[in-house]
Length: 233
Image 1 (cartoon, one colour):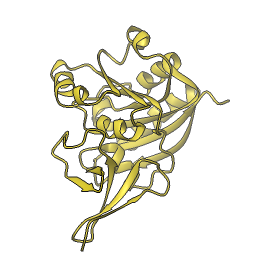
Image 2 (cartoon, helix red, strand yellow; image 1 turned 30 degrees about the vertical axis):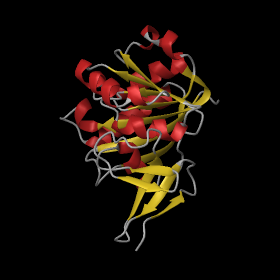
Image 3 (cartoon, helix red, strand yellow; image 1 turned 90 degrees about the vertical axis):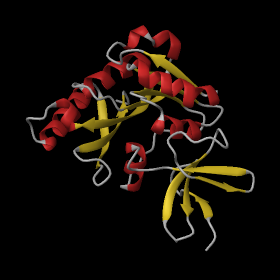
């Protein structure tokens, strides 16, 4: 059986790849052909190359496979990515927004941002690494400007508050956000379900309308992806 690629029906610049064994994987078109970011498989068909997107390494991939309805990452968008780490998911976001979009990657750990720069950003002109603390968005606001969407994956308490503070400063009116809530990073003494409700309430109290909450098992335990619209009314 030959490898084949078809566009995702709902999300432009996301693709389904059918492999030799008949299994189906999601992928993005590689903006830096010939290079991998985290050892992912590359599929070349004609003039295009695709990167298999591993849901066990990327919460966004897991959310898509678990039935995500709204993907606020689109071609040409300016995205603020909080907690970019070494760039696994951020690189796929870079693929999706394309050369006319941009991904502003905020990361607090010097080692992670060094890896992000050396292995990812230097090969992708649509990514900007920012060494900063996501709790203080005004410190990097001049580097970013207004964005279409914010993706937040920070391993800190008060994750929803961090996202809300960034949205107030940097998100366009009626913009969208995605928040990966890591229950064990917030409070190991409480049930994950209680933490999810608390973080969602923080978003709602700060002017967000939550559109969906996706549990990420089996890809990530005690995690949900919260998709929300900001400031629309």
